[in-house]
Length: 186
Image (spheres, rainbow, N blue to C red):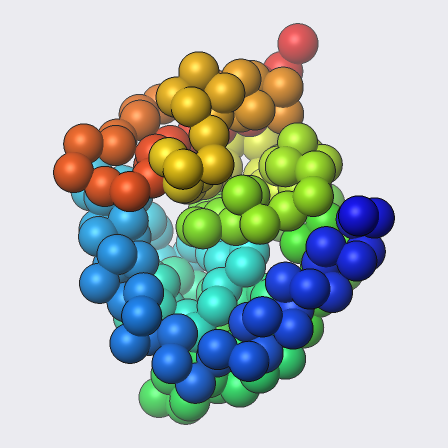
């Protein structure tokens, strides 16, 4: 299956399930978000990107701590669900776009989140490289990977291939690995 066909199937699946996504996955997503944010510092001038933002569950945790937050997703209907969540925030902006081809400048974001994203992508390293591209030099990059899609070694290898250095890695009592990373220059 071509990359575009896989993405089109993914878009269609999320469009069909957008209205029940939170019922199905909010508990697990919240556990991932809490694990990712534990010990993470965010200044008021932070610029946050949530790549593959889904219904915007992360927004409630970061919007009041950041200057601006951008939520990006390929599913129009899931972004409509996110739009309901952001109506009380002035500093959240939603973009309908592909995480492999983000319409964003390089080196912009101080914090980039890719929660439950890479296992859905046809080429996870390409996605991680795009995340790396939009992240500032000393950015915090949080990536999760479902255990059913990746071994621990495979997940760490993907991060290494995308030149992301792991600062912390959590996976106990979660269905995924939660990696807090930064860019590696070599």
